Length: 593
Image (tube, rainbow, N blue to C red; front, side, top):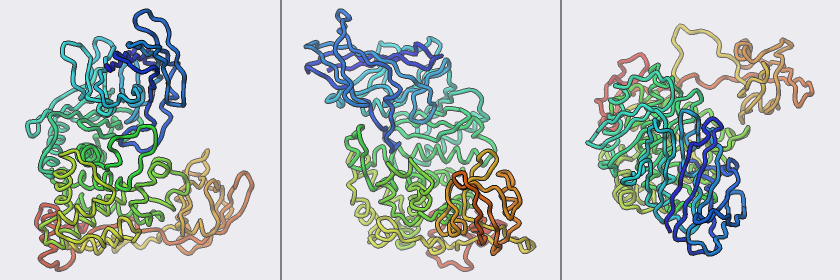
């Protein structure tokens, strides 16, 4: 059957696109059209079909209607009545500039097929085409193949490829770089932006080159970086030969912002290996109608975080000091999350109801498999490097996965990662995986660091700082009309032990009125061990709760060089960060680059 979609920006001011599906060669008495409930890379079920208007079907020969019945929230059944050619027409409201969004304005179109182009059930593996009808002065950018001789018409091998290649149209700035001789387009969509285009081209070329060198090859013949500049950033979404990032137009300055931008870019780019080609077998093929469970998301996302930041180091875009500081900050977030003891496998498996749908108790029962997965991959890397005297690393594991799985289209079984890691490195890593991947043991980051000649711990105060630490309640508060309202009460924290609970509105400390803007400052008057009476409104009723403040968690952590590392630790450090190990030569306590 021949399938062609037509997308028209007919009413951009109303954010409503008009769509048609032309089906030729229909043989079934009825045909189901199904809209996905999720898109790859974003593991939560969403009601995309709520944006659809009435779906109608007609005979192209005479325009007479064909019966259509809505079977469920995202499935329509067309009675073909023996017709071999059928046209389906509908509209979709699109005003959602997010990474997996459909957004139509008078200036711009972002089209992710999974949100507006339903598939013909039973025909997902067949080639499809999509035609864009947009203003003549708009530029259309996509990694889909253009149909020869047909303006603004593109083809995909199957529906999966269509879903995996976003389409952007408007008046973007488009430049092309050619690292390793491969064309990579940089597409900047939206007004403003404090970027320096020449620097952007140079730095993205470094990321591409370093990623390809790290893996040892690439499947690409071309690639597109989409950047949608806005005031409400949303992050990024990976695709097989592009990524779609929705970022703040001010994301490029100051330097700290720019490093976050580069980190996001590197992470999404590295997904062309991990998760787009090295992927769980459970994803082959995708089932777009329901949750697809895997215990490997920690590797697909967490290790991608690790490799993405390692690429920045290899590209010279972060210094060794910045690299170690990045992990010190990540470990601080990890240590301050009571739910970190969930296993990585469970955190991956439960992503459909956990990571993408956090609530007030989430920090006490779970942790992001991105963060914990990145830190466990860090620990695994240094474990392997130390045990093999730097002859192998997680890079060795990744290259094996690429050669034996990603490059040949073979899916990874749920229990295969350990055996691949063992075979690639020549080690028995079963104990490590049992403790930190399928198990819930806490990582000892000081021991991890010592594999590379580094110790890890709280960063000490300056010797001349004799100020008292502020009191700590173990609460996360939010602004509720100027009043601090408890959003999270951390397990084991003083506030939770005293009975404070999410939703409590704190109106006074020891009888003195407190506002959200001054809450932290007011709490600073109560050093650790101080009793303080909180006046709170709980579900509208005034109560008083006495809490004894506790010591706050360390403000900062740091990796610092040990006094006299052994030769193996030095070799690990040098192989890992690409610079000679040196003793402390900086105020921040990290080895000099």
